[in-house]
Image 1 (cartoon, rainbow, N blue to C red):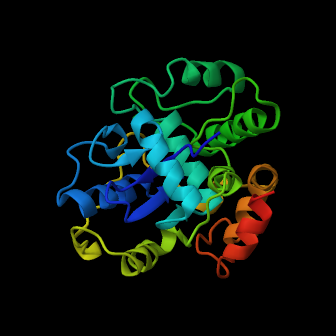
Image 2: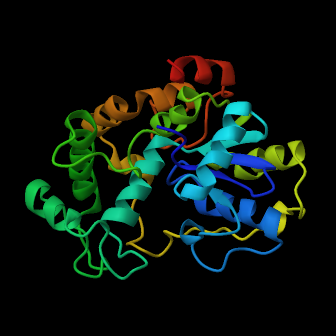
Length: 272
């Protein structure tokens, strides 16, 4: 199994477990800058040098030794499940990706055919009923996660707790899990705990939102997308995320957490 989705600075100052749709592009660029003194020119997910990634074979033994030996400060970042699944829909389903194509090739035609989803036409810019289409996408999401049909769940909408758990299950431990909604405070806490070859001034870090502009703009407040059935589906899929990361299931309009994350609870519940 190893440590999928784990990135580490080459100086081994810090280890980061990527959780998709949770500021991962910005965090990856901070890791890169802290070692190299400059940001990666392009999408950090495409970088094949300047940092360690589990997806690169040469990095695997270095990451494994570090994480199992708990040598470096290890952290991850999470996000409200309601806004995360909405972001996945607008970016991955409605949007044209940076290669100029639809995400995962035949996925969108499959959704249009099997679930009656609309995506705003070929360029994603046309008018469509965002709320109806999103709720149908939620049914698809639940089907992939519950029954692995009509395809395996995608990393962008599988539960955050699943991503977070792989590092724990294989012998790692988090020193910090913080919220996208309180990004600067959380990331500053990480930087304050470590020493990096190049200092990082968070006030000067651009927001590397690679999905921005891919798809149509959200036309309604978050809570308008979630009726009683949608909330039921979201809870079925993400109940552990709400519980462990202290988000408000009862009110989709409240993106802020309700309490502090208990790291001991996270390790106990995700380590079994």
